[in-house]
Length: 148
Image (cartoon, rainbow, N blue to C red; front, side, top):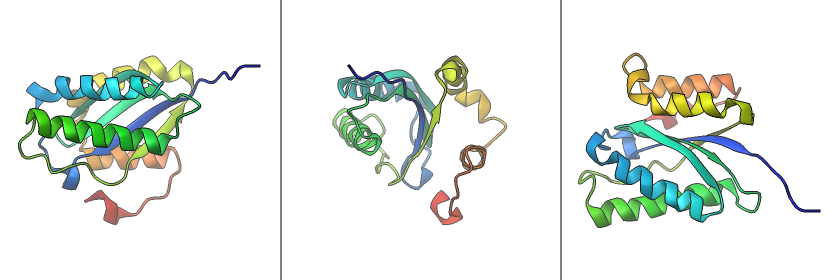
């Protein structure tokens, strides 16, 4: 028998110190780079979006790929791309950690819409409160010290 899976993730990570440096005109270039990294790892990128200080990813994880390895590849590859292209001159790197949540595949369309509407969403909620809300929804304990 072959291996069949459908593992849908939402991944969230921030710029180092949550610095608001991901300027809108260049984000699409960054998303394209990150999507290519995800797809090159045998995973499938559905949507990437965010605002100046953090990003959201909706993707399917291939069963042969460890989530931590994929995140490491995305962060390293995109940091190199940002520096090489000088996309965001004040970019110091990504925060060390990340948040990842699994969903039923039936949630995919709503998740994509949510990620596409990040700018609208953050007119009424800051990124720290958004992440805390997600962590509470998924009953994940967290330490306030790591929100800086």
